[in-house]
Structure formats: structure tokens, C-alpha cells
Length: 161
Image 1 (cartoon, rainbow, N blue to C red):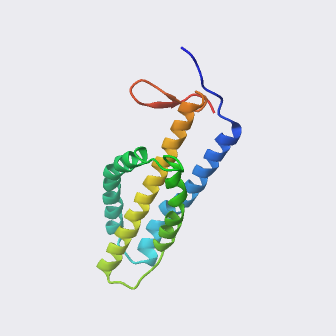
Image 2: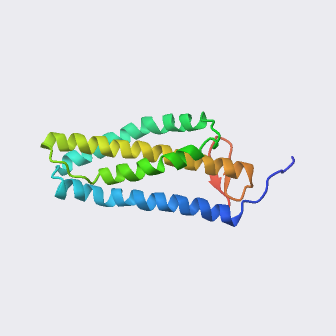
């Protein structure tokens, strides 16, 4: 079997790693501080916030495969996945800031606002992360077994980095 792969450069490895690291640092701010903000500052009960996180995760289970299919079917002059990485960066940041706004709503209004902003944030993050992962997998398939190896059954394993 002919091996027409080329080695993934250190520059490409660092570039993808730093891009994902920045996105995850941004996201970890929400995961760590958002429950505290919603309960202590925004005044929503912890039970309501916990339920919101659960409902949003259930929605993610439906939404993530849909976002993956949309990304797979995208064909643009910038490529399949790059548009999502480029054009969703600003909405990702804006929605992240909006989640920490404190509009003067009633208790139910605050909860609806929290649901809307958090769910929207998770949808934008889902699209960005699916596109990033798929781009990385495509890169590894085109390059070398040096990053991810496609195994029988559709799973990927890290061989070496």
C-alpha cells in the first residue's frame, strides 16, 4: 500500500493547539464563573440554573450532530471549515459578554434571558468546535499518522504528537 502522506509540521501542531487553547480558556471562564454569577449576582436559584445546564446539554446532544453535518456539507471559497472558525469568532465573543449582562427583568424574565444566552453560546461553541475538530481530523488524514489515526469502526486514536 502506497503511503503518500507528509509529516505534520511543528508549526501546524502549535497553531492548532494555540487556537484550541484560546477557545477553551475563553469557554472555561463561563464554566467556572457563570453558575456563581447567575446565583449571586443575577439572583437566579441554583436549582433553576442546574436545570438550565441539564436542558442545554440535552439540546447539545441533538444539536452537535446537526452542526457537524452542516459543517461537512459546507463548500465555500474559504474551504469547508474555515468559515466557521473565522466568522463565528466575533459572535462567540459577543455572546460571551452578553451572558454577563444583568438586565432588570422579573425572575422568570431573568431565567428566560439566561436560557437564551447560554443556549445560544453553546450552539455557537458547538459549531466552532465541530469545525475545528473536523478540520484537524482532515489535516491529519491528509498529512501523516503523526496526530490522529483513523481506526476501524470510525474512531480516532492519538498515535504521537
